[in-house]
Image (tube, rainbow, N blue to C red; front, side, top):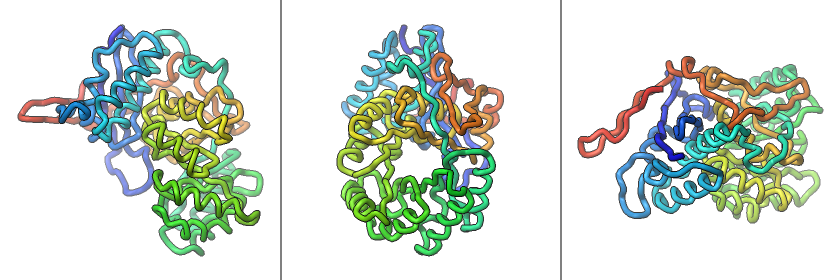
Length: 396
């Protein structure tokens, strides 16, 4: 069969706030081929991602993503890998291409899984999918007391792990950050894993991160996530040395959500001193590249963790690449998502009484958009070049 159409749908809540909540909008992707339909999602700004699909060619290494996808054969998983390679070769100088490819790749896996009657994790070679311990992923409160209240609510809900990130953390003084961490630990209690996400707030300032290590060690934080931007490998390596150099400072590092190809993720694993590599299928190039990283990390003693802070569809896609790795047991599970994300899919990925979540045992990624529910969030898009319409939002 051949890829007949690739459609993008920009969805957004009425008012998008300046907060670290990626569920406020979404870029849904639909691929059709051979009478089948696959769905994916890009974790990226919707408008430039759509533009990367349709933009006029600038030169031979800056072609629209469409040129490498539309009309291509799609009969087996080798075709998905081939399409990935085409996009990266033909759109080398189009930096948004990897994000655009991500949603398309997920949709291709979903479509092929439906055609073959198999969940994606089986197409990836896994015999079974293991349950993952869901960590409740939330933003820090505006004040330490608000952080504490969120922690108590997470504990009461039965989660076995929780991550606090972004918000005011790292933007003010060390004492305030320490109080946020202590309130989070006090609210969770001693038995729930506490994770901290700095949201790249310190750029490459190692000293700023080192100043927070004592409270993280004191409160037994399971990791410090993304203290620096993804490319700051020297800073990561220096912090890893400081965090592991003294028993009272021992804190492991996590990073990788900013990686938009396998090379960036490998560099963090090989040179950044991280213990956890966090990959977003909606950014790195889709399930294909995410699975490649999961296989690379395991023999190097680095734990693969999904990154997702958007919709249930994106969550299911993010679980597929490591579903069959028994030893990688933790997964991100956003609990403060917007109404758009909460109503996004017809199916749910619920956390069970043991605090675990299981990848759907249905063909494809096992999730479908709730079209009627999300139609109200659709943002019509029209892109023109030289007076000609080159993209218009199709019928959802």
